[in-house]
Length: 262
Image 1 (cartoon, helix red, strand yellow):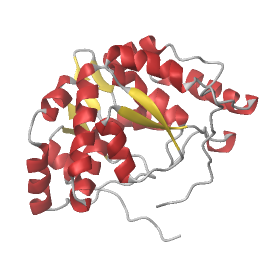
Image 2: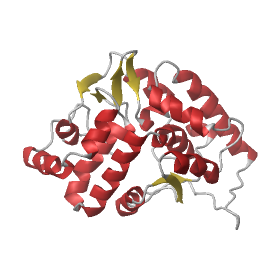
Image 3: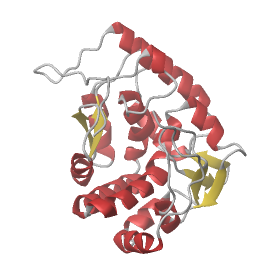
Image 4: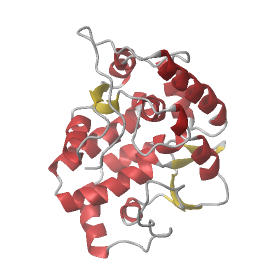
């Protein structure tokens, strides 16, 4: 597993996590900036979730606050984890309707981009849509499938997750909108993903699983759902049959240069 410079903050005996003022300021900068950027770009289901969560702007929210809303809407909750967790733990959590949240926030120096998912990415990027039953059902199914999958199958499932939950777009009567948490927590990618620069492909789970990606660049290709309900429908398809088909067909050529050696 990769290492990280970040250390998750521990709660006290009552479950309260005490963050220093400098970290609350980072949260405030991130949320106020990003709420402006997503205007007219985020999908309505995500905005409905933001409204339900009522995230504080002046401080980092406590996980209990998020849990009250998620449990009332879809039965989900968030689970405190260290900075990076193994695939196995990730799938175990999703399979039990718990979304992992690392309890650290990026530094002022890394405001714009962070390779590790921090509390802002997880709560602002992903939690709003976990209030949506379609999205919640797909995420739960995904976790159960991942838990039972082999190491090789998980690599294909990871690409499906990347192209949907992290970097998915969808078409709406109002125009193209974002639902992927990896985009919605990044000001640069929020604007770029809807521009003419990247390629936009109609969502096809088989194609998504065959498309290589890099985590450290703006994505060259995005898959576009016809509507968010398509994820719910996908949850009721035989996803593992698609995984095996993708494994037979193999990967597409990457649409990005190889990573330079360190």
